[in-house]
Length: 452
Ligand code: MN
Image (cartoon, rainbow, N blue to C red):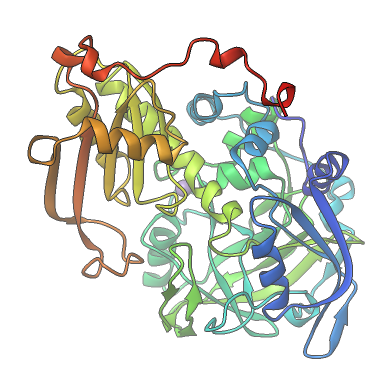
């Protein structure tokens, strides 16, 4: 179970393990912060204590790279090492209702500002062609206008004015809610919580059905209900431990230009007319910390990977029970390349595993199946399996023109080919000496330090 209940508690833990570096040097929110964060990607979480933008200095520090590795994610959610995905799936299958607490007990209510000004927050510009300052680590909370069931999701939010954000809403749950509201010419009330703990960030990324409250996943991972508190100006409940909460509504019948924005596939998402979120209030702690996720950094990729992998593992095991492990590789931007290892018992299982992988997410483009001796997180081993256990004419198959991801520039507006690669040893050959891996007797006991 996770012991983490707030972002600052997680930062404290990282600091004690020398994984969080505090930076006192003055850093420009325009590009510089993002560039430093990129250099530390996969190595350190960073807390920038002195940031400025357009000559203006901010008292609020900025933190980034909070979840650099899968090991850190395991630690954050308190999973048994190696069982992160099962742990996440279990929480998703057994959600725990959040609990509403009193406003006086909620740190995020220490400051209540009914005249919100986004320019008071240290919001970075991350990439060269970005349309402006972008909020990237806010979990957006909304309710289905028909059923009133909550939904949690992360959206890129471009600062358009002191109280206005442009929002990209891909066709998932929030899109559906806004569509219902807009057809009735009604605003859709929302809140955006910035600076939440890693458990909540992960829960927000679950691939869940419509009318599934993602807050319940966080509760199960904590082993106790997530504490939420009523917003000031909208009918929404927000995490009580958040650093900052924006309250407002997505306006019906209004579109304004948003973008371009450097996205996770390491290309820009284009500029186009998007809905507008108008703010009514900002509440925050008395000493808030602002969290930014640098697009395409490991934090961004891994937050997307883990819930997708959990869903994929469950689906593949339904059809191939002897599936050992799955991964969405970082080179495949944790979306497009699925690696699956199986303890093959029947010929043909590799292809069934590939079908199941494709059905788990429309974003998966290339799926590779390997034997259980291959580490799905070690791409050199995976490549070795492809190089030595695969013959293209019988082991590779291509499905043209399926639905893929629009942000993949090689797709035709999202229409994409899919490829499956069976890199498992044929069962008839498994015992033959031509597939016997070379071995040096005693190698496992040798320590290089004893010899140099
Ligand atoms: Mn949802």
